[in-house]
Length: 180
Image (cartoon, rainbow, N blue to C red):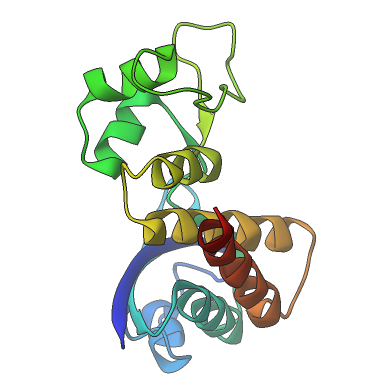
């Protein structure tokens, strides 16, 4: 069953002043992306139809690369604040704070950045997994977060062909909930 997946690819390597800037991405298969140049980055906001998130992300990356661009990362951002968590899950910030403090659940993931500040950041994939495991959000949200995290790791490692790696990660994420 086809579903629409929304995510952004941050890219570089194509001149935003070129006459064919937007057409390059459209012609390379990115006709389902809004292309913009902001803050020194090419941003492609995708609304891609696919059977699964891994297929959507892998095919979008291939399309962006076919346009001659370098994929720098995939968003939404993997680091989230409590407010971001509330927004992504559709829960209140108060509920998320209670999970973090341990008053409404145990073993909420610890922050991974800005730990000593008043506004720490969490790994979205770890939080989404915890939320799904505790039946606060659908498992699909956790799978999507895991696939995007894996895609960013592969991009950071310079991997070119991501489809198989992302498919394996999606299957592992789903399997984690079947055995639990």
